[in-house]
Image (cartoon, rainbow, N blue to C red; front, side):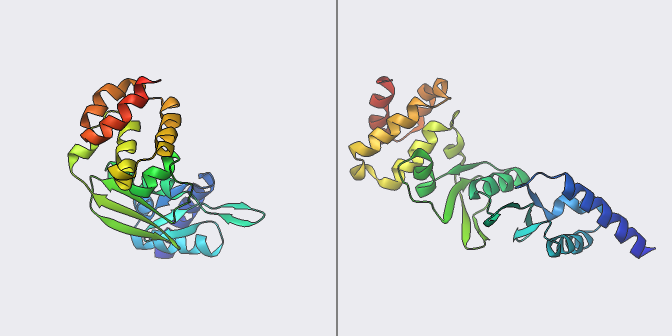
Length: 205
């Protein structure tokens, strides 16, 4: 009877895996409704052995996307967003991650960093990593996404290191922003030295 139940759970989980699109991120607990977590873990191990799923980190899985060069790794940003959604927390790119999104850095980071309303931790994804750092609620008081992203990136550089090249890159990014209606409120939450940099750029648009 137990074996029959496990086979039914296996069939149910495999069917659900087939329905996932390539590069879908999912979690072990997503399958807890079909039985025990341990049973789900065993089924996912079988799916891994058949090449149907990839194990990214503890309790985190991926339906792989493959090219003629092999498996295509998912963006760390995508994984971070899925983890945040699962944990019901907010996250915000910070440091080099924010700078990279803004085009202030062309280096592809092996580690992405986020402020979070959740707990601080680092999640290893192969030779890459996602760092979450707990931050005060005031860091998430912004209405839009552009201004807080700029604030985090400029904090990484420091006031004395803001060049004309950085300002030019910010101008390009701001020109394409879709949350312009939030700028007036959000800029008031930025440190004074960052306001002094951003305001002239916004006014020139």
